[in-house]
Amino acid sequence: MTLFERIKFLTKKQGKNLKSVALDLGFGENYLYTWKRQTPSAENLQKVADYFHVSTDYLLGRTDNMNIAGNDDQYNHDLKEFIESNMDGMAYGGEDLTAEDKQKLEMALKLVFDKYNDKF
Image (tube, rainbow, N blue to C red; front, side, top):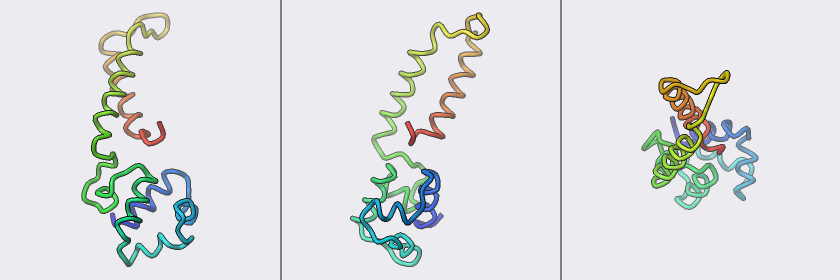
């Protein structure tokens, strides 16, 4: 994906359009479209990365990891803490969850958190 395609993807993911994102950032309404054919300044690239809570490396296609370096550890810690604090005493249909059920539920929660982590 190109820089422009990644920005377009992130914009759509948030239910917005490029014009509104550009205006939110204080750019001209068509400014982001110019990134199809020209490289933005480092300052403007960082503004867009901060807006979407992604790294500039992600925007530039150097990585497919959207998480900002350093935030992964906190994110993983928060997820682990959430799962551990809510897993004990869980029941379904009046019966405690088995170890296997808890493992399946943990995997499902991780998938949901990974998919929607920018919304939490």
